[in-house]
Amino acid sequence: MRSISKAEKRPKRKFPNPLKEVISWFNPESSYELNGHPYIQEEDGLLALHFDRLSVQSEMRLDAPDELVLGYTRALMGFMLFAPNPKHIAMVGLGGGSLAKYCYRNLPQSDILVLEINSGVIALRDEFAIPHDDERFQVILADGADYVGNASSPVDVLIVDGFDASGHSPQLGSQQFYDNCFSMLGENGILAVNLWFEYASYKEYLSRICNSFAYRIVIVDVEGDSANKIILAVKGADFPPSAATLRQRADSLSATHPINYQAMADNIIQALATLRT
Image 1 (tube, rainbow, N blue to C red):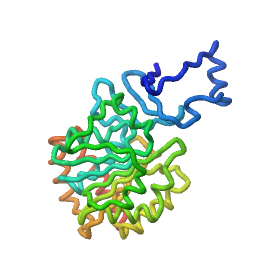
Image 2: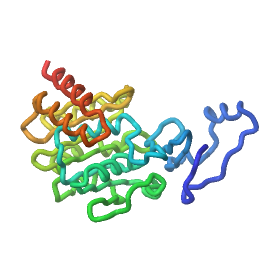
Image 3: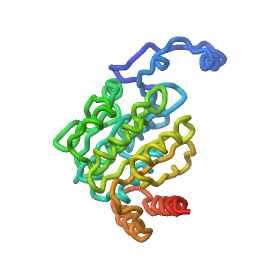
Image 4: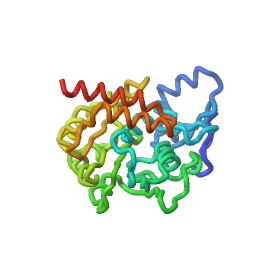
């Protein structure tokens, strides 16, 4: 059953038989989805954020709103293996707030700034149980590319997960943008980017990240998901960390986080080994 917030509610469309439902997928009439506005759908205990019917931007379990449901969100948290105690985290893209909520609940030492360009997405924050702004958590309406390009305060972690109704936002994939990401990070900062592997510009974007970060990157596969790749790019010269360091951090993190960091560390160690060959 699809649930729409009061602010986003629209008239329901009714089909007299299943055949018309199928036809509507191939010959859609002008609708809310086709305008690219964010909306939510509830089904089987999951609340999902959509821009259209074909892709899910974010998912939340109604009985466990802080859980990271989608594999790519857990993979993005792999930055913790490189920066286990971040003080300042910036995120480009709010979506359903999965990462923002997780970091807020599980990283009490971290200040978190979330940049979201779509006011409609921010309007749904209460639906996804995203915390209210406070002294260490803030969601602002802003163009992430512009903000990163003009940032004056360094951050330890920068997460870029910027997708819209058309896919990956082009302004978040330019060489200048990744150069600005590098500049925004502190001395040993890390950039975590979610890229769609099947996107036509994937290799081009990856090449630009490599250029900005002098090839200090690792590509992380997402468990059970061949479409998304997580790129972790490290600013500090001390890269890559040893396998022993990664495994030690994974053991420590697994004691306090509901994420299989041991498996993630093995994945990263294997990926780093592939880069060396």
